[in-house]
Each structure stands twice: as structure tokens, then as C-alpha cells.
Image (cartoon, rainbow, N blue to C red):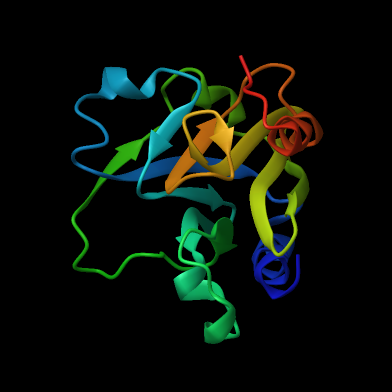
Length: 179
């Protein structure tokens, strides 16, 4: 997957082994109307997720090839991927609404867990899934359009039981939907 995956792996390395102390969804106001919208497994937003680990934060969002490709002549406008980094993907002037997920089911089960492992998965040049194992639970982050992994300009955030990075990558590669 080349340099796109390498950048996310570099951002994930410093938080491995740290405790997840908070989860903050940073969404556009059109993505979330009320806190009850957040109490579902399988959120789709155009913004980003901030994961607050002991002493360090990590931001995850979807990105378009236009912003990430090393060779501008090789960009295909529709190419989207997932990315992680230590700073926000959005400028300070972006009108993102912050939602604290730490006390909302199903997200609250992750709080206090140690980041045991992190995987960046995808096909060809573009990473499409970041899978985190936090306190024995799997957190799936993917660029998506509903459950069509890798095909959209939304960030999918899910903790579905049985949905691991491996099974999600297989679903994406097969073109089948997760239910």
C-alpha cells in the first residue's frame, strides 16, 4: 500500500500499549443531530475521530487521493483511503461539532482499555481499514459509504462483535456487505 499506509503506521506506533482515555467524534453538524444518533454501532461521518490515549492523541479520517498521493499525475479523483495522524485533518476554522463518546454505548466499552494491536489494511495502493484492538475489543475504522468499505467519502466507526480487521478486509475485498 506504499507511503499512505506507512504514514498511518508511523502515527499508530507511539500509541501502541497506551490506555484509551477518551473518544471524541468531530463531525459536521449535518452528520449528527443529537446524542441519540451516536448510540449505534456503525457511525458514518464526514469528519474525524480523535482517540485520546495516555499522553497522546490520534486522529483518524478518510482522505482523498488528491490530498495524499505523492505523484500528482497518478491521482484518480475517486481514490479515497483511511489515514491516521497526530494532528487534526481539518483546519481550525472548520465547523466541526465535538461529541464525547466515552459515556455512550457501544463506544464506552473501549474506554480504559490498552491498545493491544493496530492494523492497516486495504488493496492496491490505498489503505481502507484501520483495525484497533483495545482492551480485547475490536474498533474498526474505514473509509466507506454505508457498509461498502473503501468506496466512499465517509468515515465508518464500528465495534460490532465478531467484526475484526481481517473479516472486514475480506468483506471489502469480496465486495459483500457486513450485516
